Image 1 (cartoon, rainbow, N blue to C red):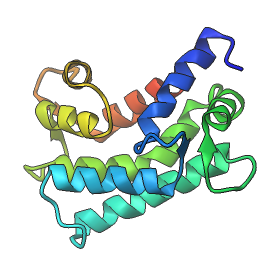
Image 2: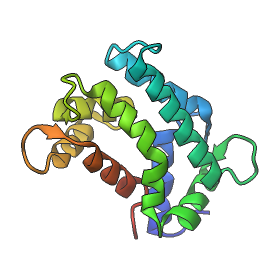
Image 3: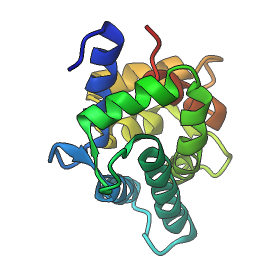
Image 4: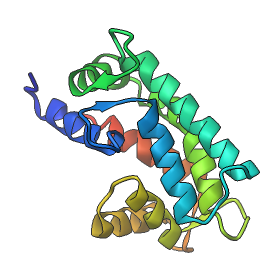
Length: 170
């Protein structure tokens, strides 16, 4: 049962990972997110960037499963997700960033249409939308990540913001 405000917020994050809405998070959700990102940016799955994204998605899934899949069935229920966040991530958001980094790095490389190692605000919003964030919220979040106002967002900004969002403190 979800009781605290923190638990309610973490439980709400579950839907962002449950890409197919079947009530649990599994490897297919991560692969679906990768496939959707590749389609959004017109990147071939067999390209170096495409393969890196799938490898990053697998690494992210393995890290999440290691934290949250308590019964070993290769599915993370909402309860397991909340419990994993409460017991393993709340006091160590850097751990979440570590397991998310390979996927986020590869996702940013796919969205980096100029090849300069940073992603424009608009493309960052597109990534967020593909991952299930609503249009207005995605645009606002992407704009906030551009702390220096140059229109470009680097990997460290994205990784730390992602970790904060999914391990939001009480």
